[in-house]
Image (cartoon, rainbow, N blue to C red; front, side, top):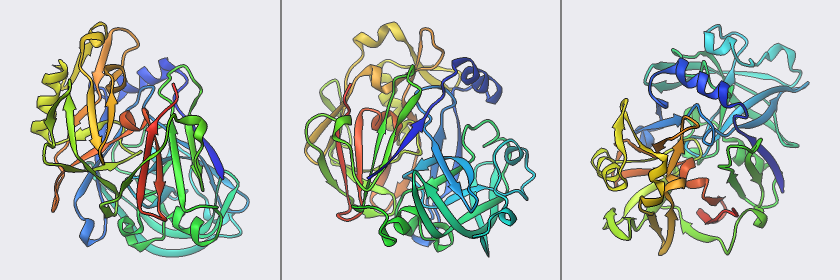
Length: 371
């Protein structure tokens, strides 16, 4: 078992400054292409620039190692970092990979592109050794970005993204990092697990474990949920209750468990109704509530595979200004699939439920985190 500590913001002032610089809204989003033909639907990838909801960790690429901070994303499957040949401002402000300085690097040269709302992140595929918390994966293909559009990544705390979804989601058919970990016998079990710490005063944001899970982080037993489609970590929601009454997904609906999305997203009409039910009001394009009303707001409960996963108002809101404004953790996003609208259970949900991703049995395990 190999554990990797996840980091969050430790400086509230820096965090708020980043939010102000970026926009008047509380968060930004960008639109990402999910890749090969059967997965050409698009996925929004939310990153909040304030405490509690951005999680990232350290990896190295090459020999001698070049260090990068990456966002670990169960909603995508590629690893990419900026190239030294990228002169976009977003690249220059982050660590960049220098292939000529690695003795183990091999150029592959396949063009790479992921589409965003502001343009396309473009680059080429290279191959090198990648080290994650003492695990060294050899011959790992990854993307070196040479163009990063607009300001999407300019203020982000991470350099790149390491995808942990299924291979069918990978752009250019690249074998994902975790698949190579399994193939190279680097992990004891074909699973990884995620603990996210929502305590804003902790310097440790959580822990990502490859090859196992840590029972110290959760209470009770893991409840296992079958993966319904092997692309994203997609599961079936039985229903969603607000204040004890079924309000959404009465006949069941599809959802993905996604560490790369900060909030919980769902169809626009459902989320609009959700905001009304929890008492959130429109504010500068988003929804918020005064934090002193949290004690009268309802529980929101996700029923999954027959088990209830309640979220308290403190769990499904984010204290975004450090004072008395709590932003709703629910966000509209319309993703239509052959199986109907798709919900995303992002970090707001994962922060309350320890999550185990089991590739060997194609299932997700959930259990309440230890307070």
